[in-house]
Image (cartoon, rainbow, N blue to C red; front, side, top):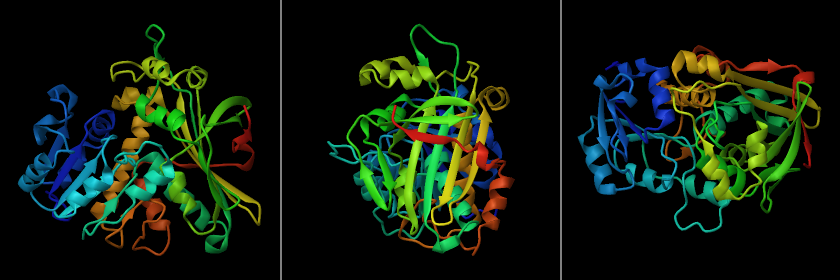
Length: 393
């Protein structure tokens, strides 16, 4: 193990496409830990695990506390627990882990026990409750939520600073496609997670200093970019809730604009859409470009700045065996891992997102260098190249 690493064991819990992407993108991350443990409910096939000779593979459910207790007890300490599961009570999990020397990262809000009326506000108020752990907990990490929040903070720091008033728009424009099967529609990530945001959670946004949740269906918009008119939806997203809580942020929203077959299918009944959407396996070539844009406008001075990160699905698939969304999410999660390994985070007893995480460094220059060194390539958009979003279908 690298003697400078503060953690002896890395546990990756929930080994789907993102877990695989993390190991494909940065296999050398394993050199920083004495032990790597991969956990999944199903029995994993060895061919699913890059560099499998280095890893211990365990079948079990992290919602089972007796299983989890055995897993943590056997691991060299301290442990970095990377939770990539999507259907877990993440607050309950963190509460359980807090009695061990365990740092924690997850990739989304998870679920709220007994929640019969989905709401991003209720969900985030629940999952952000503090637990008494001397080790840091980073929640809702990845590209969005996650990296986009740090990019927004960097942009604000370069504009009017702390005294400004800001509108923040996060836009994902994805032309992802792949060979079709019957009436199936290819999607770059989990259909269940995507449909939760598109169809089940009410639109959430901050507007004129106030937060709103609107009745379903999610709000439709038009997105104009590079001479094209595209369909879009304003959806509930963890990053927007987190950004909305930053002092001076008076407006914030997240917009999906994917290719036409997906945007058209959203209007169909939920079960029909779920049946038709599929994620191509890693042997299937994929095409198109995924672009994530963070647009920050200082309201009083009417100054706009935007950064974008575009990834070509085919080039990424040919090089790494993952699609562009998996690449962006995996790279961003690895960045969060590096934040913990390098010890640049201040504070304990609080679950941090990248919207509120306190850093040891007084400015963002160090973090910008970390992002660049990680190969995460955000580029500035000129004012005339920033997408225009118009409300209404």
